[in-house]
Each structure stands twice: as structure tokens, then as C-alpha cells.
Length: 325
Ligand SMILES: Nc1ncnc2c1ncn2[C@@H]1O[C@H](COP(=O)(O)OP(=O)(O)O)[C@@H](O)[C@H]1O
Ligand SMILES: [Mg+2]
Image (cartoon, rainbow, N blue to C red; front, side, top):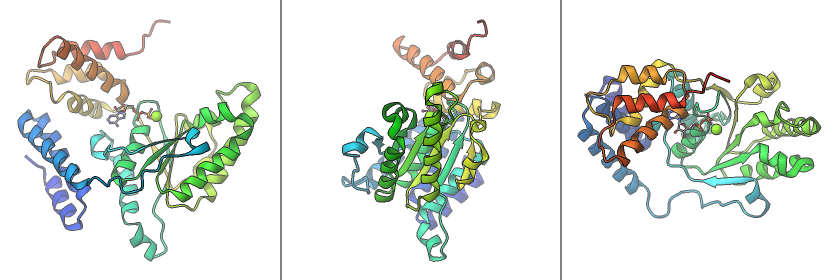
């Protein structure tokens, strides 16, 4: 049932006292079981994980005092405490490894500090929409039990046109004060491409102050920025980060995994995974998930407990962009 790798991971996490990894591995086992058609076992395992996580989280959690941005910051930062885990995501092995590494270094930052080493904490996520950039920021916060503070750069620019550098300074001051994952979404907005001609200068100025703040930052927070088109910004941008993580559209294997994970609870054993995976080829993770949920909702609303292959195929086809103009 469990693979050798999973058994090793269970033992290792037990020895290291890494409860998160232990439970994540059990969750992988549950997914594995679900894919093999052992729905009952999968359900039991998931229920046990939920219970364990609940127990692990006494009333006083989250551990960082519930930091809700106040005053001016409230307009700049959205705060949340995600429970998302990396194990919840379907990831290509290289991306998974990069994200795991961030978590490992962060969890053992005291050990690194003894040798004057610093954990990775300035990350640039590059990739097309719907490939898991925002999801990863949430999962990093979830894994590290840190609050997630999201900064919508485009709305900062739109709202404070001439004053963005001062507003950004507030955000970086907060990062130094309250440890968290600070997620700067949609860095493209600073690339100038989408800005009105009149705003281009301001966007560029904002970008250069943003880069300066990133470079100067010596806080304990994680600074995560997401961008769709790496090409928009020059190499100078990449230099300021500890890691560049490139997200991509799912390959056929990942398409299948995403569909299987999302449909696990309602897929009959007769479902034609090959056909479904073919219909999903070329879609982003977000589109795949959307289509699965659509098919699942239809089934529920029609009082069916199982999803038909053709209903999923149809939902996936609706998600493909029309080719006609
Ligand atoms: N790698 C992934 N594994 C599983 N689901 C994913 C993945 N990437 C995206 N999704 C699904 O798509 C939704 C949108 O993804 P998101 O992270 O917001 O994309 P991005 O920020 O790259 O545009 C997520 O909430 C999740 O449901
Ligand atoms: Mg996003």
C-alpha cells in the first residue's frame, strides 16, 4: 500500500519530531489510497489527520498573536491564517523540492543562525495564471504556522499614485515587526506594460523602490512576490531574491493527478481517466479544479453520488478557451 519512500518519510518525520511532515505524509497515503479505489481507508485516514491537527491546535493558536493590520496598513495588507499544506498541492517534483527546501530552512533557522547562515526567505514565483503561485504562498504560511499578508500591488498603485513608495515602506516596516509571509501579488503591475502611458513613470519608480526595499530587508519574514511574465522585468529583479521558482502548466501526469485528487470522493471505479485526462490537456490547475467542481456540483444537484465520465469531459471542454474569435 504505502511506498518505501512514504514509510521512510514517516519514520524520518517521527524521529525529527516534525508533526507537520508526518501528517502530510499520511495525507499522501490517503490520496494514494483514494486513487487506488480504497475510498473508505482514505476517508478514515483523512478523518484521523483532521483530528490530529485539531488536537495540535489548542484554542490559543495561531501562535503569532492574531495580527490584524490596523490604521493605514489595513488598506494595504490583507491578513489570513491559512491551513493549506504543500501536500494539498499537485506539484512537479522540482518545484516541490524548492518549496520543501524553503520550509526546511525556515523551520531550522535557529540551527542555521548558529553558523551565521540565513534561511531562504525572499522568493520570486514566476508562471502563468492558475498554476499555484498564490496557493504556494498560502501553503508556505500554513506549513510554517505564519500569518499570510497579501499586498495587492496594482491596487496600491491605483489608490496612492504619487505616494506608493511611502506606502510600501509601511509594508516593509510591518514585515520587520511581525513575522509572516508577505505576499506581493501581481508584480507585473509594476512592469509598466499594463499601466496607462501616464502612469508608466510612476509604476517604474514604484518598482525601483520596491526592489530597494526587498534588497535592504533584513527581517525574519518571508517575502514572496508573484509575477506572470518573467520577461517583463529585467535581470536586476532576480538578483534580489534567494530563490526563483518557475511554475508551469501541468504536464499530462500532473493533469491526471489533479483530476484524480479532485474527483476522488465521487469517481466511480468505471470512470475513464484516460479520456478525462485527454480532455484536460492544456488547461491550468485552476481550470482543472474548476471543471471538476462543476461536474461534482451537477452530480450533487441531480442527486447522484457518482460523476459520469462524460460530465467531466464536458465541463473540461467548457473550460478551454474558445478558439473562434
Ligand atoms: N499546483 C496546484 N495543485 C492543486 N491545485 C492547484 C494548483 N495550482 C492551482 N491550483 C488550484 O487553482 C486555484 C488557483 O490557483 P492560484 O494559486 O491562485 O494560481 P496563480 O496564483 O498561479 O494564478 C487554487 O486555489 C487551486 O484550487
Ligand atoms: Mg495568484
